[in-house]
Image 1 (spheres, one colour):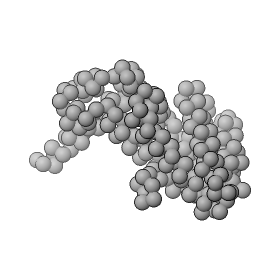
Image 2 (cartoon, one colour; image 1 turned 135 degrees about the vertical axis):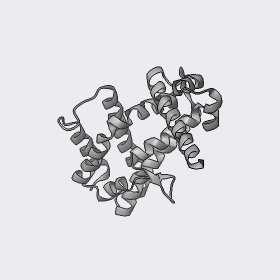
Image 3 (cartoon, helix red, strand yellow; image 1 turned 90 degrees about the horizontal axis):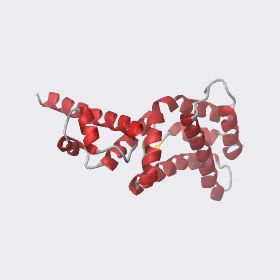
Image 4 (cartoon, helix red, strand yellow; image 1 turned 180 degrees about the horizontal axis):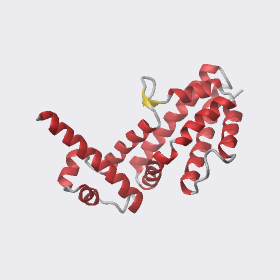
Length: 202
């Protein structure tokens, strides 16, 4: 019986997250109320508050789902990391970087709703903006770690190189979300990989 209750609670939490994501994307983060989310799940705001104290906390949970989709995991040196990115930055060849970018772009259809919602929320919610900036910093930390392992470039320039690379990737991701292009047919990802190689490679 206890196990069934645990499963039911987990299912309710998943339903709240799924409906919040759907409503945030459809109506916008600001326009979506807690009552909207609870009603969509067929429950009440009291139940919502049993799982999430506010909308920002449900966004934190959506961020955790985004990290899982991107294969980012807890790490002792900084909060989240993706070892394949560290390796791509360490090796620094066009082929390895292009392969890594190819894997990331294959995830864009799945993560597009998360990126859309988080980008909008960060524009209006200071706490969400801090979370988003911290996430961006963690990704740059992976690049810096790879460059440090390789001993490539002046240490004082590594973080800025990582920042520029991530700005290029983030901008390309957002452009694809708003104006999709064929991921395997056009030159866009090759151009992006070449820009990354110029910034990070030998």
